[in-house]
Image (tube, rainbow, N blue to C red; front, side, top):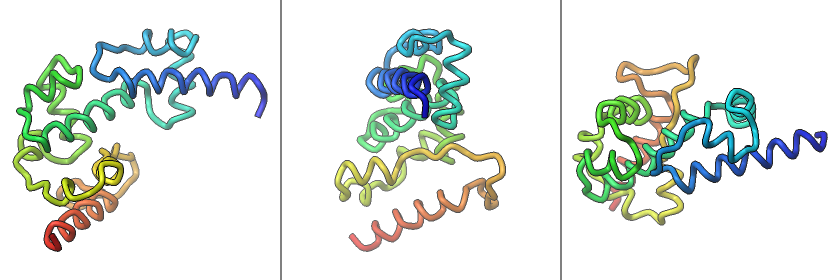
Length: 161
């Protein structure tokens, strides 16, 4: 790998760290690109090539991931939406449903005992939203095989507790 490519990856990592750290602030692609010292168009192309998703998609995935934790804690959907930096409840709910497979209200109403029994680092990995892949087979409920395994594992752990 040439030195220029390594430098670009370091700049992209700085922008990704910005998203991870400040997901609840109003962030847009030009702000992330400034952090990476790139133009917005070049930044978007390089980010997608390096991480497999667009910068905005990565930001929304982090926001949904944090909202899931807040909803498990009993926060209302509207409050969780605003706490993670989303300004439109409708857009937030649509993206949440797309990533998680159920509405935020339904997710909040579900039983989360298995997740609360896990260490935080394990819960973060096990409950991370999974972006749909275009050619991935789905069942009748629209869930991928990976999502089914995760949900089945949660149910088995909850039954064992």
